[in-house]
Image (cartoon, rainbow, N blue to C red; front, side, top):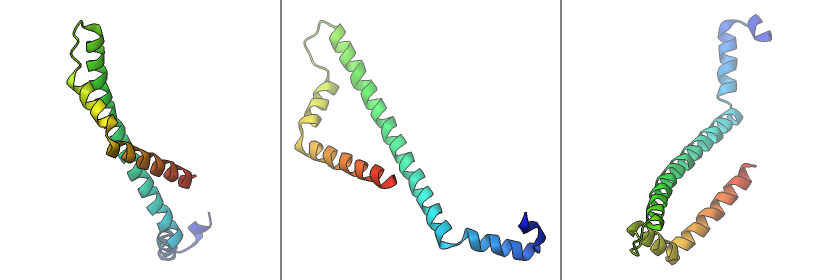
Length: 105
């Protein structure tokens, strides 16, 4: 290893300059951005899983019962799904997600 033959102070300076170089700083920034977005996706997936679990339990209970009363969670879900704002937001989010994935590759 050629770094072993350099004096310690000069070696540390070289490592410092490489670590703080613009290209390395850019890569560090990209990695941090990727990890933040990954964390956000994980949080969104967790929240979605809770919602899906609640709706699934309500739907399962409704289908197994003899009641004609639709559970409140299903009514709310239908209202949200029919809302124009929700549909537009869903379209924008999926477009942005697709663009982000394509930029990542």
